[in-house]
Length: 202
Image (cartoon, rainbow, N blue to C red; front, top):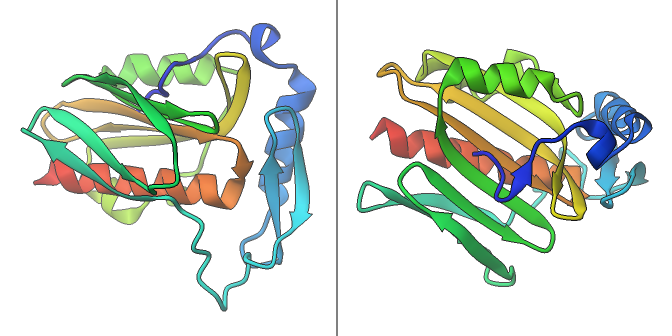
């Protein structure tokens, strides 16, 4: 999913290198279950105390509950009813929705061209393959995951982009970016990526 309205631009147009480096450094240092997490407010990242970052309890902060395929062409996302969002595009090859705090996009693409473009975006970092869900890795020919910052209008969001190429040479770019606690953003991204994989595997 490329993000709804999230356009990759040169970092000088979107954010400065210090902002990107600070975000990536804190994310690299963050450990699951240590009682701390990274918060992104749209301008800077900070490490905060987080009682919900506890392996003994369920986090419960994700707002997405699934992704449905509609008429085998269009996509719809079930979202927590408290979320106010708008559909920007609901086409077979491009689905975009956004709110004041997050942005999601699914786009049919060319795998190699997408990877080349994303690697040139200095605000994004390639993640290790083991960060990608096992089912997504096993049921696709090629997969790549990126983490970083993107601009959406006048705002800068943090999140993830997944690019997959299935065994039938279909490729998709999926992105979920937002503001707030990165555990929630990562959880929402994982939920969307996993639900999308379930649908295209049907």
